[in-house]
Length: 516
Image 1 (cartoon, rainbow, N blue to C red):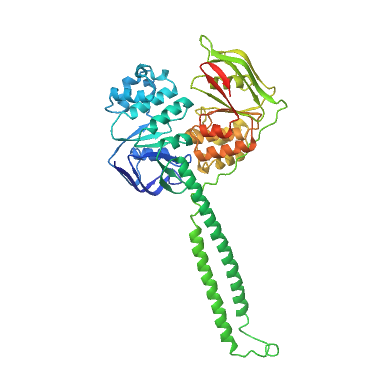
Image 2: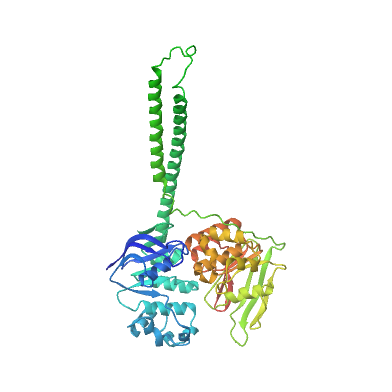
């Protein structure tokens, strides 16, 4: 076991307005299973790149360990080759027997190494790369969001696999995944960084308790400052009034007063003014203690959505419905039966490649939102309600290019409202002046979510909306959907999210559709 010590780390990107890290110091052990959490854009991937030595920085990062990073970058020309041919380029000195050993733990046969890499599913690719990653000795592994685009079965396999490992930093926004896989949390708070023993749930409980305490302390200081201001104001008023009586008096009305009274009044006034100064010093101390109390408190703004009401109760009807690609004998699925009623939030579940996204495309085509694809053949009935207005989130973000202003103009969105929603999702204003292709994947997803929330619709059709979205924003969205209860059809593999907001699940398995 060794340590990674970070001391007075400061880093910023050239041309950036703010530091990503400023005088950050902490230490972690290399045998920990470390979960890495924080808002999108706070610097999680940047910190991993600093460990890898990809950027220059101020301060020191001291360690004698060797780092390796997931996901590996697979060049386009390698995609047509089997992994066995290029895995040594990914990890120097990797041994085939060790990769086969790790693949067995991940539930895969070794023959997968001899298949073209682009023929593998997302889940299979992730498992192969993880097997290569963990086939070394004494490396400290940097694992950056391994669950994106994985179906539920693959997530469970990877989750159980990582639970049996140690010596890694895991960046993930999946609460269930973190709870199973990690024994420490490294949290990028709003202004500070903290390291804490335990899984995500224990850290979150402690954070809520700490946030509640500092909010109570802040309120106590605020009330004390208000009382001191009021008392100081009264004392100052009395001192000024007393001071004005020092010179000149009416002997008929103030017959008890003499010239010797003036020094007495002056002394009394000086005492009152001294009391005012003492109160002001106390106020300064209270204000100083109050400053910084709320710097790490997460206080997400409540989001809003504008669902439309349809004159029909049933918005979507499927009866013995099936889809297959032209020229293929085997259907993606068949005999799918379900209805989607107003107010329901239905989750589509199933393995990668089972036809969930194809079903969504078919719904969009029948609703007139997309052109009909000739490559898809249907059987049975799929009937959306007439005049159905759909707000759609695509799982792909590669089409996002240019400035936010152009994006809003193209979609007829109110730019100020749109930017307001992005701010509520904790996107920094400085991002609004950048091209969207330079956004992080989480920030791109927030653009699509904000656009969907701002679009009044009867049906919200979301295809893997939470990929790369930070856990705080996920909780914001959960609260929103529970409050407004829009009608939704969702593909999403976050177990906690589905348990929180789902009303029923439509599962596609072994080519058949089941509603439960």
